[in-house]
Image (cartoon, rainbow, N blue to C red):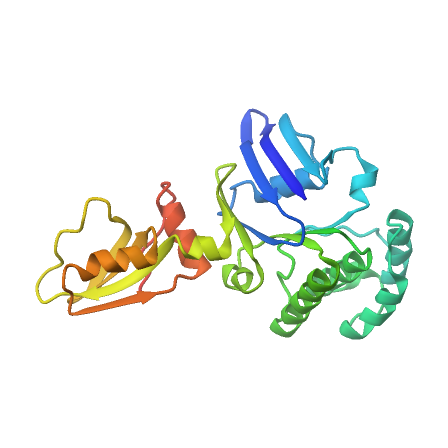
Length: 299
C-alpha cells in the first residue's frame, strides 16, 4: 500500500532523509523505530504530504501523496505534537473532520464516547491535559474510517489502562477493516506486542525492514558454559556482543539461531541455552553494529 523509493530531504544543507526506501503492505501493522534524529518524524511527514521531497517518490495506493487530496482522504495522521483550533471543543472538531473526510462515521463516534469517559466533548480541547488531547485525536482519527492510520508516538503520555484500550481499538479496526497502520514509537516492548513488520531507521535510512518473525529469527541470544575458558569460535560465527559471569557466557549472535546452536554444540559445552531476543535487544545490537553508541546491558 505504501511505497517509498530513494527519498531525499534536505534542510539547509543537512540531509535528513538519505535515499530512504520503505514498503508497507495493506493490512500490516508496521513499527518504525530508530534513535532520536534518525528521521522518523520527517519520513512520516512525507507520507502524509506535509513535506515535499527533494528527490524520490512517496506513493500510497500507487499515487504520489504530495498535494493529492484524493489520497489524503484515505489516511489519518496523529502527530506527536497535536494541533487544535484555538477555541474548538471535541464536537466542533468532529464537524471539521466530517467536512474533510467523506467516510467519517458519526455512529462510531457516538459509540466510542463511552471509551473516553473523562472527556467532556463540549469543553475546549486546549484546556485538557496532554493525555486527554491525545485521546481526542485518536477518537477523531479512527472515526474517519481510514485505510491507512499513521501514528507518531500515539500513546505517549497516556496511562497504562488507556494505552491498552487504544491498542485494542486499533487491533479491532485492523482485524475488521484490514486497516494498514504505521506507528513510530520508542516503546519497543509495546510495539513488539502489536506489530507484524518492523523498519529500523538510522541516519536518514531504513537499514533493516523485515517481518518481526524474520527479524527475531536472524539474531539470537545464547548462554553457554564450558569446563575451561571459552574456546575460539568459528570464523563465520558473527558475534554482536559477548559478556560473561564466571564460566557462563552470553552471546548475541547474528544468523540462524538453530545453526548457531549446532556450531556451539560441536565444542561440547557443559551448558547451552537458546533464548529469544526482544525487539528492544535487536534494536540495540543491530544499531551497535553501525557505530551507534550503545552501553552494555546486564542480562
